[in-house]
Image (tube, rainbow, N blue to C red; front, side):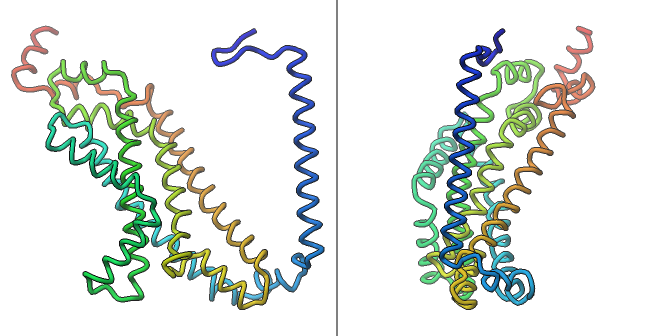
Length: 300
């Protein structure tokens, strides 16, 4: 029995997969046991190193919460700016006008090719040299600027690819009933493309959250990871404990983001018979030009 994507496994393939699974599980258990034993021998599992995170609120109020607040602030600002900017650039790359399409392509390819850390450092220098932004706020501005420029370019490519992945008949059918190009994009193509692009967009939003740590490592931006570094020095060599807690926080944030996106994607798909919004006959008549509206009535 075969599937659309692959052939059904035979008895030998099933036995081989079971053996490989058992070997992998045993190897993983051995690795975890080795890590646990090494940490225990080095004294990294002593309760005194983990106690500040469970018995006192000082570690949270002084280091973790302020760092988390800065991380979320930088990520939220970058998302709010990068999403619409990326959508505009992606649509501009599909324009029929060369004077729109070519500059948009240059901007996207330029900033997509530069590492985000370089953009952050360059932004910090620009804000220090040509603006009146205070030295306390410059790291935040630089981190957001770097994240926006890089991720907006990546999101632009995601939007362009999502729109181009739709069947060409969608645009042709919309043009046949008299819709203008901006109406085709806004009412036909984008509603369908958003659902298809959602997993890739969310993956890029997760990248934004994680890349805020670059600002802490280089630009002295007091985000969550740099706060953990300071915290480990204050409490005395509990580096493993500090970074474990911070890793769990990052996992929770990103898992919540992907879970919400999965729920939203499922809701959008359940609300539609296809990946795009269904336009009724009344809506078509309203969107059509006046002359074409009369022709539609005559033919029906």
